[in-house]
Amino acid sequence: MSLPPIDYERPKCLHDAFSLLEEMGIPMAGGTDVIIQLRESYLKGDFSPRLVVDLKDLDELSGIEDQGEHILIGAITRLSDLIENELLVHYAPSIAEAASRMGSIQIRNKGTIGGNICNAAPCADSIPPLLIHDAVLILASKGETREVDLENFLRGPGKTDRRKGEILIGVKVKKRDEGGEFFIKLARRDALNKARMNFAAWLNLRDGKISEARFAAGAIAPHPIRVREVEELLLGEEPSEALFIRAGRIVRDKMLEITGRRWSTPYKSPVVENLTARVLSEAARRAR
Amino acid sequence: MKKLTVNFTVNGERVRLRVPANRTLLDILREDLGLTGTKRGCDTGECGACTVLMNGRSVNSCLVLAGEVEGAEIITVEGLGGEEALHPLQEAFLEEDAVQCGFCIPGMLMSAKYLLDRNPDPSEEEIREAISGNLCRCTGYIPIIRAIKRAALKLKERK
Image: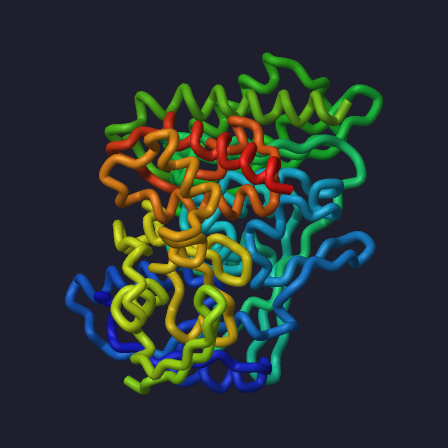
Protein backbone atom coordinates (compact mmCIF):
# COMPACT_ATOMS: atom_id res chain seq x y z
CA MET A 1 0.00 0.00 0.00
CA SER A 2 1.00 3.56 -0.68
CA LEU A 3 4.02 2.77 -2.76
CA PRO A 4 4.36 4.86 -5.90
CA PRO A 5 4.04 3.11 -9.24
CA ILE A 6 7.32 1.32 -9.85
CA ASP A 7 8.87 -1.03 -12.29
CA TYR A 8 11.10 -3.70 -10.85
CA GLU A 9 14.07 -5.44 -12.38
CA ARG A 10 16.43 -7.97 -10.85
CA PRO A 11 19.37 -8.19 -13.23
CA LYS A 12 21.44 -11.37 -13.26
CA CYS A 13 24.70 -9.72 -14.33
CA LEU A 14 26.49 -6.42 -13.76
CA HIS A 15 26.28 -5.47 -17.42
CA ASP A 16 22.48 -5.57 -17.36
CA ALA A 17 22.45 -3.72 -14.06
CA PHE A 18 24.53 -0.86 -15.50
CA SER A 19 22.18 -0.54 -18.48
CA LEU A 20 19.12 -0.43 -16.23
CA LEU A 21 20.68 2.14 -13.91
CA GLU A 22 21.49 4.39 -16.84
CA GLU A 23 17.74 4.65 -17.43
CA MET A 24 17.23 6.46 -14.13
CA GLY A 25 16.94 3.27 -12.11
CA ILE A 26 17.18 3.35 -8.32
CA PRO A 27 19.64 0.74 -7.09
CA MET A 28 18.27 -1.35 -4.24
CA ALA A 29 20.26 -3.73 -2.05
CA GLY A 30 18.28 -4.82 1.02
CA GLY A 31 15.57 -2.22 0.47
CA THR A 32 15.04 -1.41 4.14
CA ASP A 33 15.73 2.27 3.41
CA VAL A 34 14.76 2.45 -0.28
CA ILE A 35 11.23 1.09 0.23
CA ILE A 36 10.57 3.48 3.10
CA GLN A 37 11.89 6.41 1.06
CA LEU A 38 9.64 5.46 -1.87
CA ARG A 39 6.69 5.39 0.48
CA GLU A 40 7.61 8.75 2.01
CA SER A 41 7.94 10.41 -1.38
CA TYR A 42 4.56 9.00 -2.41
CA LEU A 43 2.94 10.33 0.77
CA LYS A 44 4.43 13.74 -0.01
CA GLY A 45 2.64 13.67 -3.36
CA ASP A 46 5.44 12.54 -5.64
CA PHE A 47 3.76 9.95 -7.88
CA SER A 48 6.43 9.81 -10.57
CA PRO A 49 7.14 6.30 -11.80
CA ARG A 50 10.51 4.78 -10.94
CA LEU A 51 12.52 1.78 -11.85
CA VAL A 52 13.84 -0.19 -8.90
CA VAL A 53 16.92 -2.21 -9.79
CA ASP A 54 17.31 -4.98 -7.24
CA LEU A 55 20.98 -5.93 -6.93
CA LYS A 56 20.54 -9.08 -4.85
CA ASP A 57 21.31 -11.55 -7.66
CA LEU A 58 24.71 -10.03 -8.46
CA ASP A 59 27.31 -12.53 -7.23
CA GLU A 60 30.09 -9.94 -7.63
CA LEU A 61 28.53 -7.99 -4.75
CA SER A 62 28.22 -10.77 -2.21
CA GLY A 63 30.46 -12.48 0.29
CA ILE A 64 33.26 -11.62 2.70
CA GLU A 65 36.72 -12.37 1.38
CA ASP A 66 40.17 -12.53 2.97
CA GLN A 67 42.55 -10.55 0.77
CA GLY A 68 45.68 -10.71 2.90
CA GLU A 69 46.04 -7.25 4.41
CA HIS A 70 42.40 -6.45 3.73
CA ILE A 71 38.96 -7.92 4.02
CA LEU A 72 36.62 -7.30 1.11
CA ILE A 73 32.99 -7.10 2.18
CA GLY A 74 30.56 -7.39 -0.71
CA ALA A 75 28.04 -4.56 -0.89
CA ILE A 76 24.98 -6.80 -0.62
CA THR A 77 26.27 -8.66 2.43
CA ARG A 78 23.45 -8.59 4.94
CA LEU A 79 24.09 -6.97 8.29
CA SER A 80 23.24 -10.19 10.11
CA ASP A 81 26.00 -11.93 8.16
CA LEU A 82 28.60 -9.49 9.48
CA ILE A 83 27.90 -10.13 13.15
CA GLU A 84 29.43 -13.57 13.52
CA ASN A 85 31.76 -13.57 10.55
CA GLU A 86 35.07 -14.96 11.82
CA LEU A 87 37.29 -12.65 9.78
CA LEU A 88 35.48 -9.57 11.05
CA VAL A 89 35.22 -10.77 14.63
CA HIS A 90 38.98 -11.36 14.63
CA TYR A 91 40.34 -8.46 12.57
CA ALA A 92 37.58 -5.84 12.67
CA PRO A 93 35.42 -6.53 15.72
CA SER A 94 33.98 -3.01 15.83
CA ILE A 95 32.34 -3.57 12.44
CA ALA A 96 30.71 -6.79 13.68
CA GLU A 97 29.67 -5.06 16.91
CA ALA A 98 28.14 -2.10 15.07
CA ALA A 99 26.21 -4.45 12.78
CA SER A 100 24.77 -6.24 15.80
CA ARG A 101 23.41 -2.97 17.15
CA MET A 102 21.66 -1.83 13.96
CA GLY A 103 17.89 -1.84 13.44
CA SER A 104 16.15 -5.01 14.54
CA ILE A 105 16.82 -8.66 13.72
CA GLN A 106 14.31 -8.39 10.87
CA ILE A 107 16.06 -5.31 9.49
CA ARG A 108 19.51 -6.90 9.83
CA ASN A 109 18.25 -9.98 7.97
CA LYS A 110 17.46 -7.79 4.97
CA GLY A 111 19.55 -4.62 5.23
CA THR A 112 23.04 -4.62 3.74
CA ILE A 113 26.33 -2.91 4.45
CA GLY A 114 26.42 -1.37 0.96
CA GLY A 115 22.95 0.03 1.51
CA ASN A 116 23.96 1.51 4.82
CA ILE A 117 26.96 3.21 3.18
CA CYS A 118 25.14 4.53 0.10
CA ASN A 119 22.11 5.69 2.08
CA ALA A 120 24.64 7.92 3.86
CA ALA A 121 22.64 8.73 6.97
CA PRO A 122 24.64 10.94 9.35
CA CYS A 123 24.00 8.32 12.05
CA ALA A 124 24.81 5.21 9.95
CA ASP A 125 26.28 2.82 12.48
CA SER A 126 28.50 0.89 10.09
CA ILE A 127 30.43 3.97 8.99
CA PRO A 128 32.54 5.00 12.03
CA PRO A 129 33.95 1.45 12.39
CA LEU A 130 34.60 1.31 8.64
CA LEU A 131 36.43 4.66 8.86
CA ILE A 132 38.81 3.41 11.56
CA HIS A 133 39.61 0.52 9.23
CA ASP A 134 40.61 2.95 6.44
CA ALA A 135 37.73 1.66 4.33
CA VAL A 136 38.02 1.97 0.56
CA LEU A 137 34.96 1.59 -1.65
CA ILE A 138 35.01 -0.18 -4.98
CA LEU A 139 32.56 1.43 -7.38
CA ALA A 140 31.88 0.22 -10.89
CA SER A 141 30.06 1.59 -13.87
CA LYS A 142 30.01 0.57 -17.51
CA GLY A 143 33.67 0.49 -18.51
CA GLU A 144 35.13 1.90 -15.31
CA THR A 145 36.00 0.66 -11.85
CA ARG A 146 37.33 3.10 -9.30
CA GLU A 147 38.36 3.04 -5.69
CA VAL A 148 37.38 5.86 -3.34
CA ASP A 149 38.21 6.36 0.32
CA LEU A 150 34.98 6.10 2.30
CA GLU A 151 35.96 9.36 4.00
CA ASN A 152 35.89 11.23 0.68
CA PHE A 153 32.79 9.42 -0.56
CA LEU A 154 30.50 10.89 2.08
CA ARG A 155 29.24 14.38 1.24
CA GLY A 156 26.28 15.07 3.53
CA PRO A 157 23.00 13.61 4.76
CA GLY A 158 21.98 11.15 2.03
CA LYS A 159 24.64 12.58 -0.28
CA THR A 160 27.63 10.70 -1.63
CA ASP A 161 30.11 10.79 -4.45
CA ARG A 162 28.33 7.87 -6.17
CA ARG A 163 27.93 8.85 -9.80
CA LYS A 164 24.88 8.18 -11.90
CA GLY A 165 24.84 4.58 -13.08
CA GLU A 166 27.50 3.52 -10.59
CA ILE A 167 27.17 0.48 -8.35
CA LEU A 168 29.00 -0.06 -5.09
CA ILE A 169 30.64 -3.45 -5.47
CA GLY A 170 32.15 -3.73 -2.03
CA VAL A 171 34.15 -2.16 0.73
CA LYS A 172 37.75 -3.03 1.50
CA VAL A 173 38.77 -2.73 5.13
CA LYS A 174 42.23 -2.94 6.64
CA LYS A 175 42.75 -5.85 8.99
CA ARG A 176 43.97 -4.84 12.41
CA ASP A 177 46.36 -7.50 13.69
CA GLU A 178 47.54 -5.32 16.52
CA GLY A 179 46.05 -2.86 18.94
CA GLY A 180 42.53 -2.63 20.23
CA GLU A 181 39.31 -1.16 18.92
CA PHE A 182 35.88 -0.31 20.23
CA PHE A 183 32.50 0.91 19.02
CA ILE A 184 30.02 2.75 21.17
CA LYS A 185 26.56 4.02 20.38
CA LEU A 186 24.15 6.24 22.22
CA ALA A 187 20.46 6.17 21.39
CA ARG A 188 17.14 6.85 23.06
CA ARG A 189 16.62 3.14 23.66
CA ASP A 190 18.59 -0.07 23.21
CA ALA A 191 16.79 -1.76 20.33
CA LEU A 192 15.50 -0.54 16.98
CA ASN A 193 17.10 2.81 17.46
CA LYS A 194 18.75 5.57 15.53
CA ALA A 195 22.08 6.57 16.97
CA ARG A 196 22.16 10.00 18.57
CA MET A 197 25.90 9.59 18.45
CA ASN A 198 28.24 6.78 17.58
CA PHE A 199 32.00 6.52 17.92
CA ALA A 200 34.70 4.07 16.92
CA ALA A 201 38.36 4.07 17.86
CA TRP A 202 41.39 1.93 17.17
CA LEU A 203 44.62 2.41 19.10
CA ASN A 204 47.94 0.64 18.75
CA LEU A 205 50.58 0.83 21.46
CA ARG A 206 54.36 0.61 21.28
CA ASP A 207 56.41 0.68 24.49
CA GLY A 208 53.36 1.84 26.35
CA LYS A 209 52.75 4.82 24.04
CA ILE A 210 50.13 5.28 21.37
CA SER A 211 51.85 4.58 18.06
CA GLU A 212 48.82 4.57 15.76
CA ALA A 213 45.33 5.97 16.25
CA ARG A 214 42.05 6.18 14.39
CA PHE A 215 39.00 7.92 15.74
CA ALA A 216 35.68 8.40 13.97
CA ALA A 217 32.40 9.91 15.06
CA GLY A 218 28.90 9.73 13.60
CA ALA A 219 25.71 11.75 13.96
CA ILE A 220 27.50 14.85 15.24
CA ALA A 221 28.05 16.24 11.74
CA PRO A 222 26.28 16.02 8.34
CA HIS A 223 28.15 12.77 7.74
CA PRO A 224 30.35 10.55 9.90
CA ILE A 225 33.87 11.92 10.17
CA ARG A 226 37.38 10.93 11.18
CA VAL A 227 38.61 13.43 13.71
CA ARG A 228 42.27 13.86 12.84
CA GLU A 229 42.87 16.43 15.57
CA VAL A 230 42.16 13.66 18.09
CA GLU A 231 44.40 11.18 16.32
CA GLU A 232 47.25 13.73 16.27
CA LEU A 233 46.79 14.55 19.94
CA LEU A 234 47.08 10.89 20.90
CA LEU A 235 50.19 9.95 18.92
CA GLY A 236 53.26 9.42 21.07
CA GLU A 237 51.33 9.83 24.32
CA GLU A 238 50.74 7.34 27.08
CA PRO A 239 47.07 6.40 27.40
CA SER A 240 45.53 8.19 30.37
CA GLU A 241 42.19 9.45 31.52
CA ALA A 242 43.39 13.05 31.31
CA LEU A 243 44.52 12.57 27.72
CA PHE A 244 41.21 11.05 26.68
CA ILE A 245 39.27 13.84 28.38
CA ARG A 246 41.28 16.34 26.32
CA ALA A 247 40.36 14.33 23.24
CA GLY A 248 36.71 14.57 24.24
CA ARG A 249 36.92 18.35 24.38
CA ILE A 250 38.39 18.40 20.87
CA VAL A 251 35.48 16.35 19.55
CA ARG A 252 33.00 18.62 21.34
CA ASP A 253 34.61 21.70 19.77
CA LYS A 254 34.61 20.01 16.38
CA MET A 255 30.89 19.31 16.69
CA LEU A 256 30.17 22.92 17.66
CA GLU A 257 32.33 24.20 14.82
CA ILE A 258 30.45 22.10 12.26
CA THR A 259 26.86 22.27 13.47
CA GLY A 260 26.82 25.42 15.59
CA ARG A 261 24.88 25.67 18.85
CA ARG A 262 21.53 23.92 18.83
CA TRP A 263 18.80 23.35 21.40
CA SER A 264 20.40 19.99 22.17
CA THR A 265 23.91 21.37 22.66
CA PRO A 266 23.84 21.63 26.49
CA TYR A 267 23.00 17.93 26.60
CA LYS A 268 25.21 16.78 23.77
CA SER A 269 28.44 18.57 24.68
CA PRO A 270 29.23 16.71 27.92
CA VAL A 271 27.98 13.44 26.42
CA VAL A 272 30.25 13.77 23.39
CA GLU A 273 33.19 14.48 25.72
CA ASN A 274 32.45 11.52 27.96
CA LEU A 275 31.74 9.00 25.22
CA THR A 276 34.88 9.99 23.36
CA ALA A 277 36.90 9.39 26.53
CA ARG A 278 35.12 6.09 27.10
CA VAL A 279 35.61 4.72 23.59
CA LEU A 280 39.29 5.68 23.66
CA SER A 281 39.99 4.18 27.08
CA GLU A 282 38.26 0.95 26.11
CA ALA A 283 40.26 0.78 22.86
CA ALA A 284 43.45 1.39 24.88
CA ARG A 285 42.51 -1.31 27.39
CA ARG A 286 42.00 -3.76 24.54
CA ALA A 287 45.30 -2.74 22.95
CA ARG A 288 47.28 -3.69 26.06
CA MET B 1 3.71 0.17 -14.38
CA LYS B 2 4.40 -3.34 -15.57
CA LYS B 3 2.95 -6.32 -13.76
CA LEU B 4 5.22 -9.08 -12.55
CA THR B 5 4.66 -12.79 -12.48
CA VAL B 6 6.07 -14.25 -9.28
CA ASN B 7 6.49 -17.87 -8.26
CA PHE B 8 7.14 -18.77 -4.66
CA THR B 9 5.90 -21.01 -1.87
CA VAL B 10 3.83 -19.97 1.12
CA ASN B 11 3.67 -22.45 3.98
CA GLY B 12 4.80 -25.18 1.62
CA GLU B 13 2.26 -24.47 -1.10
CA ARG B 14 3.28 -23.23 -4.50
CA VAL B 15 1.91 -19.87 -5.54
CA ARG B 16 1.98 -18.18 -8.93
CA LEU B 17 0.66 -14.64 -9.10
CA ARG B 18 0.58 -11.70 -11.45
CA VAL B 19 0.85 -8.52 -9.41
CA PRO B 20 1.79 -4.86 -9.84
CA ALA B 21 5.45 -4.26 -8.96
CA ASN B 22 4.59 -1.85 -6.16
CA ARG B 23 2.94 -4.50 -4.04
CA THR B 24 4.75 -5.72 -0.99
CA LEU B 25 4.86 -9.25 0.35
CA LEU B 26 2.52 -8.05 3.11
CA ASP B 27 -0.03 -6.85 0.50
CA ILE B 28 0.26 -10.14 -1.34
CA LEU B 29 -0.27 -12.24 1.77
CA ARG B 30 -3.24 -10.27 3.04
CA GLU B 31 -4.95 -9.06 -0.13
CA ASP B 32 -4.13 -11.65 -2.76
CA LEU B 33 -3.84 -14.81 -0.67
CA GLY B 34 -6.25 -13.97 2.16
CA LEU B 35 -3.63 -14.87 4.77
CA THR B 36 -4.65 -12.18 7.23
CA GLY B 37 -2.76 -13.66 10.18
CA THR B 38 0.16 -11.44 9.20
CA LYS B 39 -0.71 -7.94 10.43
CA ARG B 40 -0.09 -4.50 9.01
CA GLY B 41 1.13 -2.19 11.74
CA CYS B 42 3.46 0.66 10.90
CA ASP B 43 4.27 -0.22 7.27
CA THR B 44 7.80 1.08 7.86
CA GLY B 45 9.62 -1.90 9.35
CA GLU B 46 9.46 -0.70 12.93
CA CYS B 47 6.69 -2.62 14.69
CA GLY B 48 7.32 -6.21 13.59
CA ALA B 49 3.61 -7.11 13.31
CA CYS B 50 4.17 -8.24 9.71
CA THR B 51 7.13 -10.52 10.50
CA VAL B 52 7.34 -13.68 8.38
CA LEU B 53 10.14 -16.10 7.58
CA MET B 54 11.62 -15.68 4.12
CA ASN B 55 14.08 -18.41 3.17
CA GLY B 56 14.41 -19.22 6.86
CA ARG B 57 15.13 -15.66 8.02
CA SER B 58 12.74 -13.34 9.79
CA VAL B 59 11.91 -10.21 7.80
CA ASN B 60 9.34 -7.42 7.89
CA SER B 61 7.02 -8.35 5.01
CA CYS B 62 6.10 -4.67 4.57
CA LEU B 63 9.70 -4.13 3.41
CA VAL B 64 9.74 -6.88 0.79
CA LEU B 65 8.79 -5.93 -2.76
CA ALA B 66 6.74 -8.35 -4.85
CA GLY B 67 9.65 -9.01 -7.19
CA GLU B 68 11.87 -10.03 -4.32
CA VAL B 69 9.74 -13.05 -3.44
CA GLU B 70 10.44 -14.77 -6.75
CA GLY B 71 11.72 -18.24 -5.85
CA ALA B 72 11.43 -17.62 -2.12
CA GLU B 73 10.07 -19.87 0.60
CA ILE B 74 7.72 -17.95 2.89
CA ILE B 75 6.38 -19.15 6.22
CA THR B 76 3.60 -17.13 7.85
CA VAL B 77 1.86 -17.61 11.19
CA GLU B 78 -0.72 -19.78 9.38
CA GLY B 79 2.15 -22.13 8.56
CA LEU B 80 3.04 -22.64 12.20
CA GLY B 81 -0.07 -24.60 13.03
CA GLY B 82 -3.86 -24.42 12.93
CA GLU B 83 -6.68 -25.03 15.38
CA GLU B 84 -6.38 -28.79 15.02
CA ALA B 85 -2.67 -28.93 15.61
CA LEU B 86 -1.21 -25.92 17.31
CA HIS B 87 2.52 -25.31 17.26
CA PRO B 88 4.12 -25.57 20.74
CA LEU B 89 4.70 -21.82 20.57
CA GLN B 90 1.01 -21.19 19.99
CA GLU B 91 0.08 -23.56 22.82
CA ALA B 92 2.50 -21.86 25.17
CA PHE B 93 1.15 -18.40 24.31
CA LEU B 94 -2.36 -19.60 25.19
CA GLU B 95 -1.25 -21.33 28.37
CA GLU B 96 0.67 -18.29 29.59
CA ASP B 97 -2.12 -15.82 28.70
CA ALA B 98 0.38 -14.11 26.47
CA VAL B 99 -2.29 -12.75 24.14
CA GLN B 100 -4.44 -9.75 24.92
CA CYS B 101 -5.55 -7.89 21.79
CA GLY B 102 -3.46 -10.26 19.72
CA PHE B 103 -2.35 -7.82 17.04
CA CYS B 104 1.38 -8.20 17.67
CA ILE B 105 1.21 -11.93 18.36
CA PRO B 106 1.65 -13.32 14.82
CA GLY B 107 4.86 -11.30 14.52
CA MET B 108 5.95 -12.30 18.02
CA LEU B 109 5.37 -15.96 17.15
CA MET B 110 7.42 -15.72 13.97
CA SER B 111 10.30 -13.94 15.73
CA ALA B 112 10.14 -16.58 18.46
CA LYS B 113 10.16 -19.35 15.88
CA TYR B 114 13.20 -17.78 14.22
CA LEU B 115 14.93 -17.75 17.62
CA LEU B 116 14.04 -21.33 18.58
CA ASP B 117 14.98 -22.66 15.13
CA ARG B 118 18.53 -21.44 15.73
CA ASN B 119 18.74 -21.60 19.49
CA PRO B 120 16.57 -24.26 21.17
CA ASP B 121 17.66 -23.30 24.66
CA PRO B 122 17.67 -19.48 24.83
CA SER B 123 18.38 -17.43 27.95
CA GLU B 124 15.93 -14.74 29.01
CA GLU B 125 18.31 -12.13 27.62
CA GLU B 126 18.36 -13.91 24.26
CA ILE B 127 14.55 -14.07 24.20
CA ARG B 128 14.33 -10.34 24.93
CA GLU B 129 16.80 -9.62 22.14
CA ALA B 130 14.90 -11.93 19.78
CA ILE B 131 11.63 -10.01 20.15
CA SER B 132 13.21 -6.56 20.30
CA GLY B 133 12.00 -5.86 16.76
CA ASN B 134 8.38 -6.57 17.75
CA LEU B 135 6.34 -3.97 19.57
CA CYS B 136 3.55 -4.95 21.93
CA ARG B 137 1.36 -2.21 23.44
CA CYS B 138 -1.13 -4.14 25.56
CA THR B 139 -0.29 -7.73 26.50
CA GLY B 140 3.05 -6.70 27.94
CA TYR B 141 6.33 -8.45 27.29
CA ILE B 142 6.53 -10.46 30.53
CA PRO B 143 3.91 -13.11 29.63
CA ILE B 144 5.27 -13.25 26.08
CA ILE B 145 8.78 -13.96 27.35
CA ARG B 146 7.36 -16.59 29.72
CA ALA B 147 5.50 -18.23 26.84
CA ILE B 148 8.62 -18.43 24.68
CA LYS B 149 10.50 -20.08 27.56
CA ARG B 150 7.66 -22.55 27.96
CA ALA B 151 7.62 -23.30 24.23
CA ALA B 152 11.35 -24.00 24.31
CA LEU B 153 10.76 -26.59 27.06
CA LYS B 154 7.87 -28.16 25.16
CA LEU B 155 9.97 -28.46 22.02
CA LYS B 156 12.80 -30.06 23.99
CA GLU B 157 10.43 -32.60 25.56
CA ARG B 158 9.08 -33.60 22.16
CA LYS B 159 12.52 -34.40 20.80
